[in-house]
Length: 440
Image (tube, rainbow, N blue to C red; front, top):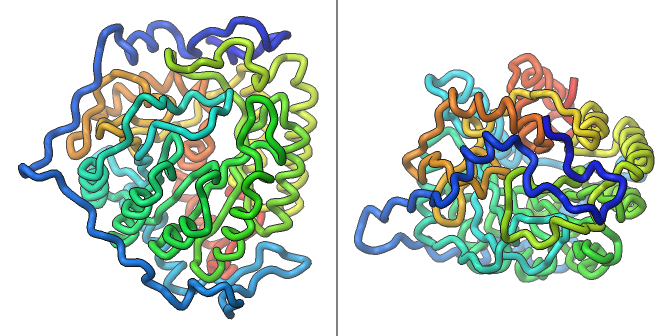
């Protein structure tokens, strides 16, 4: 099997344009092939979102302290109170769809969907191929029909994706408002450059459930513009307002060869502010991305010489996890990063295309994020074409090149005994949260 393409002694060496084998790559990206167009709207007039009501909760807009803002103790910075309605909302987002997916006939029962409202970005992180500023964002018609279709399935978790989802903040507000009104648990990732207080107020008031705060460094570095200090005021406001509105925040960090000490600092900042962390290990594109301009001579790629330093960082993160720091990653998954970095990944029962789905800006479907650029026809909103046989055959190869945290957690949780154990663990704390991460 192909190992990690950045497993080189020198980061300036020319890189392979993709990591899966040639046969699978050619199947997924047929030369000259184009994806099917999204189906036309059912009526002559494109559908529109209802205009969001703002504010729905005017009493929460004040900067004065409110009783709901009470949180944390010196011995437990994560301490906060979840109301019965907030607990039920989370159950309806995650737990109920999970059990429905286990009980209902058929193979396509999505739990989470990634709605790519944008494929443009306002930053240029040198490891990131997931944007192309020539591509127009999702239309209101496609977004609304996507949410309506997802609502007809088991899916009740909706993640806005990009690019940068907040490039059009009014559009993001409409999507969050509409999805939340339909009972979705809504997830918004962002590099936070556009996450101004006014935007935070609108997303929070609309019903956002969690904010994925993507950050790689404390101060900007070459090739790593997602830094905390330039948006520290936005971060502080976001943290302060989460308790009254009932959303959560976590840091999403990508481990690169040039930010190892920053990852430690950001981990401690997250802990001090009572929020969780999510770690990724830097990787090059799985499929060819002709628009990606940083494939070669990329200073962020981890080289063989960096392995000991990265190993030491991972060990440090694991110790923090065992000490009670809240993390999306389990200890086992963190340990697996070392093998992934060395090109040694075992199949892990991926559920992509069965329990999760991505919707591209044009309304076409794919099973997972690395397959965004594939031209293979998996269908369009309302008309999926996912076949387990094709997915399983594809995953024999692509799983060994993939380190998706959420998809791995979904696969790991797709075990009744583990799921029930986790629910009982949460119930033992009156669904007020637990430290550490999901694992046996």
